[in-house]
Length: 394
Ligand code: PLP
Image 1 (spheres, rainbow, N blue to C red):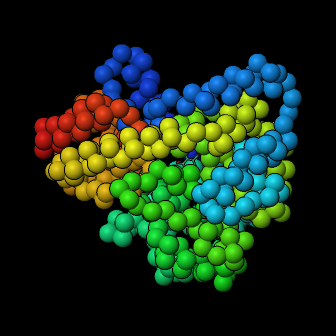
Image 2: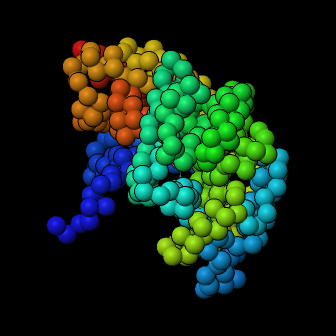
């Protein structure tokens, strides 16, 4: 066998794989509407691009930066925390990474011993569980039920706790459900983690993409005790439409941050220098474009949610944030005679050219994920086709 047991034991990211498959079909000339993507469809704001061009023109390209990021960018991250979290982070409490995804990986590699357990509320972003496994840990799934807005309760996490529990993962607003934990819910979970000395990994990457007056609380802002127990993950991909630049960051306990920097120093070395200069401008520069992009997502959500909700066999909770809808399609599967969500989405792609991501990779085998990070025409046409697919095959 040429491949390692390690790599055979993990899965490719289902979202990236679904997006690649849809893009391939489209490139081959098929009429495909792509609702698989996790990347905003807006261009990166011009001031950010200009800062990157200036970095290139002034030679900021021929050196490694510190593994944990440029000091000026750490300063900008501190400003970000002062603006949005209401507290400061010193340079030792900050690492800038090649995307938030790498920050999460470096965190698991830094804190997990073989067999340590990570509580992951479902439905969950696809990479968490495989990253835990890559770090020799064990993912422990706790079901966020649709009737509870896809959120887990204190009783559920307590029932999952063992003497191996090392980390509780929180992702609010959530990918894929778009739901937000209230301050009270987070306080309960945070105090529970402090009481049992369990680390919290708070993935806040969608915290600025919230709609219709919803409010996000970040768990690290609730109390000093909870903050000390929490590593915060954030990044620029979603809010600033900078997915391709690969800039994320993590903040928290300096000992863990230093360990993460050690992992980075032996793997990526540092995030691309030019992208770091672009990131400084993103955080310090004009934020009005970011607010405008949020407004566009909100408009789309409010237009498409009622239409999706009317389609027979589909049950959907209205999300409060992120840019996904995560409907339960059990009824539609029964009506069309498919007994699993992969066959259902494959048939939808083949017959109507609509590409969605199946929910099973997120731990929810009766659901599908539709991204509305695409233009309104594509989304509305896709909803028409989904309706037609269910009606024609019933
Ligand atoms: N966390 C969540 C919940 C995500 O949805 C994503 C991207 O899809 C990431 C982290 C990773 O983002 P980045 O592009 O910064 O690696």
